[in-house]
Image (cartoon, rainbow, N blue to C red; front, side):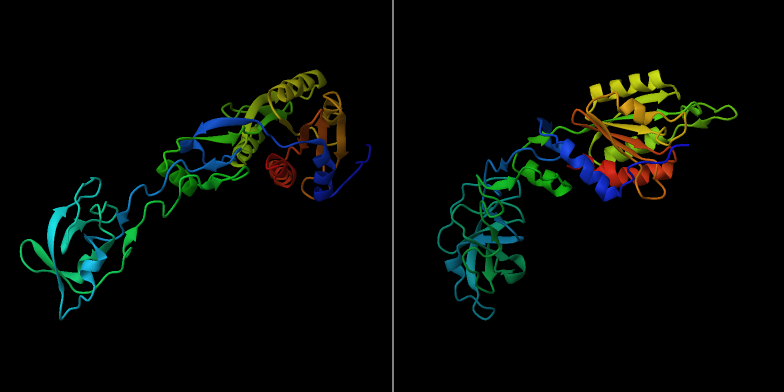
Length: 326
C-alpha cells in the first residue's frame, strides 16, 4: 500500500490553502429581524436620533429645574400639577412658574421641562399640588434626544457579525433591512457503498449515513449554507459527477470518506479533475484525522474528510471552519 505523502500539521495545511482562496465579497440585503450571525457588508449609519425625544428615566414629575432650587424637607417647593403625560402619548403642555406634569419612565416630558423629580422625592400637598422635598438639576433623570445614538453616527462597519443586541438596536432606529455578505455555500457529498439514508433500515453490512447531517449542521453553525448533494457509491464516475455538481452550486466542497489510501478511496483522483491546482496535501499530522485531503479547484477549497464521524468533525473544526470564517 502506498505511503501517505506531504503530511502537514493543521496550521501548515491551512497556510498552504490560504493563498489559493478568497473571502466572499458579494453583498445582499436581508431583513434585520433574521440577520443573527450574518456578517455586515457595508457601513451602517443611524438615520435618526435615539431617543427621538427627551424622556423621563424615572416615574415622577417633569419640572423646570429652577422651580425646585432651594427645596428641602423642611421647606419644600410647592408645584401645581397641570398635566398627566402617559407613556406612549405626546403633549403640547408648556409649564409656567411653579408647575409640574406627571411623568412616567420612558415617557415624554412637558414641552419646556428640563428635569424630572422622582416620585419618592415628593409628597402630596392637596388634590392638585405636590411638595418637592429636594432640588433637581437641569437634565436630572432625563434621557435627552440623541443621548444613545445621534443621527449620522456610525453603528457597524464591514465585517461585524450581527448579535441579538444589534438586531434590537437597529430595529429601534427603524432599520429593517441591512447589507450583509452572502453566505458561503458548502456542498457535502458522502461516499460509500455501505451507506443508506437515515430513514432507511440498513441491511446487514450497511450503516446509516450520519456524516452528511452532522457536517451540514456544523456548516450551518458556522454561518454558512449547507448544500447536500447526497450519497454516492465507491465508484469513480458517480463521485466525479457529484463533485462537479457540488462545485458548480457551491463555494466549497466536502467529501466525507474516501480520503484514505485504499483502492476504493478515490477522492484525491476526483479532486484533481476539478480544476487547478488540485490536491495540495494528502494527510495531516493529527490523530484522529490523518487521512485528510486538502485541494483547490480554480479558487474553490475542497476537503476530503475521514469517514469516521469524530475524525470528520475534528478536521472540520481545524480546517473547514477557519475557511468559512475568512
